[in-house]
Image 1 (cartoon, helix red, strand yellow):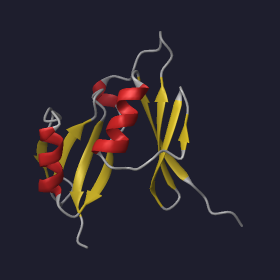
Image 2 (image 1 turned 90 degrees about the vertical axis):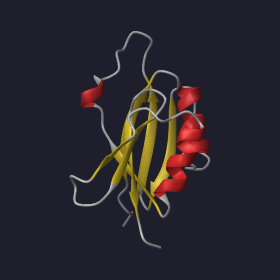
Image 3 (image 1 turned 90 degrees about the horizontal axis):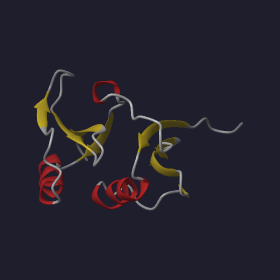
Length: 120
């Protein structure tokens, strides 16, 4: 029986900029699928993160309605510094409404994601 897979789809206008951000800044590695309209990164066992280029006249979802996801890291402060050093300081907030500390950031197009501390 084939293992189920799951994915998150994030709509973007500038696929090239977002591909570079997710690949190089967030260090998700080289995409498993890569085209002019679709980029797929494996972010876990059976879990994919897809960047989908919107059509030229298709609006992006309102910022408050966009999907958010977690990026686990063992040193969130070092990762935060890397993001800040590359100019991604906007929307950086600390939040622990979930019961654990999170750092909130957005990608180049305002799509939110959280850095979450994990013990190695």
